Image 1: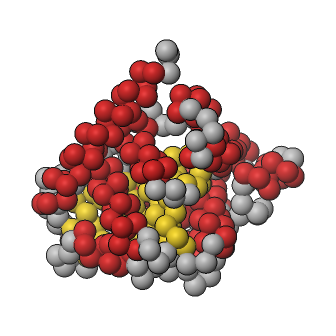
Image 2: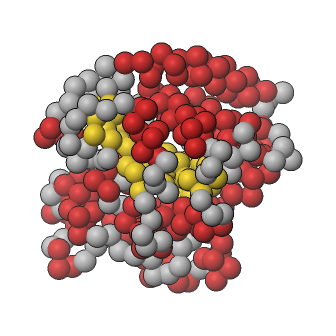
Image 3: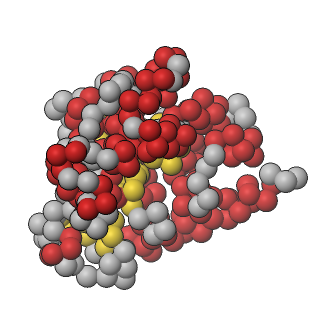
Length: 293
């Protein structure tokens, strides 16, 4: 009985989000990266001309999560007849892929899935609806993120410390080593987030362990998405992820291009703001969705 409550809560949240989805789409402001008015329909159409749609989120933005579900559903409905639509998620780590696959295949119950997959605290409200949509429509779901224990190891001891892991562990859960370092554009964005980078030493010293830990997340997600694209021709991946990983087309998109040159990427970033601000929003993505109405 202990697993029944999360299941009931998840079901209620899914029903509420599905009911709210249509209302949420009616008035949400959408812009191109240049600030021109756009729409969710424009995002869905653009998705058909790409290989990967990054849905950059703020993790606590409930309307943003509702719109992610709406976009996943609409992309699948619009393109699923000709494209192999796949959901990839930052919110699951690579070492739970088997558990995720077992749940999607109906081999294990949801309570067992939840106990074994280490879902985020807001899973029932914000991410379960996407997983359940994928399950109901037989869409693959990729557990794309690096296991946190290895990211922590890099933050403490540097990326070379991953060489000490057993080779089968590295092959199963991480990208090939050494993984790509962050680009200068991504490093500048990181330094700005960290208050100018003074605490991380001069540029000549190279990326800090903290930044290389961040880069491990990006490299792992990029590598897993590239693998999904390689497995089935004409795959279209939808990847919800923290916006910092993808805004300005750097981070995870850089890593993906490293592993799959020539890949076509669409970056949609969601910001909890009410009005367009060119200084804050221009260039964040191919589309910018404002959820702070």
